[in-house]
Length: 525
Image (cartoon, rainbow, N blue to C red):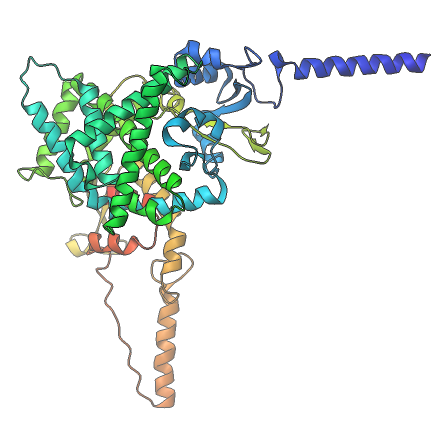
């Protein structure tokens, strides 16, 4: 009897713990802190709605639970991270959780790259990236310039009393630029461009409506018919462009050509084309809207941007590959607008195996959100996170102070006995060391094994010994031997930067090339 009583107590205790652990209002799948679901069906969806947006919800979530927290996206347990350290731990994850982006499927299609994971997703992504290489981007300048000229012409016709529909005009500009640079000259027709934009607005408006009211309209309702017609128009337009480029055998440098070359079905071509076009103009338009709004409310920053544009372009009024890197302050203004406008509030990744993140176990197939907007406005990183264009935004790291030092053991007086050095900004030295550490392996692989000068772990004495050994050998064998020498005494002071950058294009990654181009642009002493 006593044994049975002990068994009954243990069984009931275990059952009670299991009920508490598994009950929907208190789901526990990991040690990560976070929210319990508000309801069994919708999880914390209602909390996201009350916060106003996913970004505002994530801001509240991390404010309460710290840099890693969990919540329920419907019936899917989801982890969110909000710190540079956690982003780094998760940086190599490629696959995206399809359930978090399912709301976009009616627009971009189920065959979209957005839902392609594993080998297929990686292969498509790698092939399409060719369209965004430094070399290919230079071919888009003319199209961007024409789109910008048309916007300037429109605004120049207005007077000071006229209202400027900023968001609307910039969306039209972004749509024009995105369509021309991804799908080609087909969209030079303004009526076609406007029709495509109108169709997108109808589709996007319906998707936003479904976020607020998840009840789907009836198939025969005017709302559903309008949505279906607009979506079908976008797909038919893209398919018509694809057919045109195939029939005319156009071998261009546009993204659409890369998609046609790689994709195996019409669905993939259409879906991937729409995915990239929408992603391009939606983000661009929102960024430019915030940027011009911030400039309008900060006249001193607006004046600095204007002066830089005038100094760089002068009377030429044409942005090219040769002068783009000179817009240093303008680039900083765009970056600050991207940060404060929270244009890209979050991303998400998933792994099909158990992993560890921030010291916690993350069960397999758990979506992990990267709360980018939360970090971009984190007061621990940004002293004044909500202040746009603070005084410390523009730090010139490309200027140095030249001084001279006396060479050891040399007499004071003669200029030849002085060694000039340049004192650099600490930020520049840190950035330079980061680039060095990220590129030295690839550069060492590229350099000849016989090159010893200025290389870690090697010495020019090795070369000198080889030279003396050869000289000794010629004397001993009584033979002629010819050696060609190169005077490297001025190698550091006469570097052709453009030639150096061209050589490194085939050696190091594009990210490092961009940093180096920035470090070498507009340097002054």
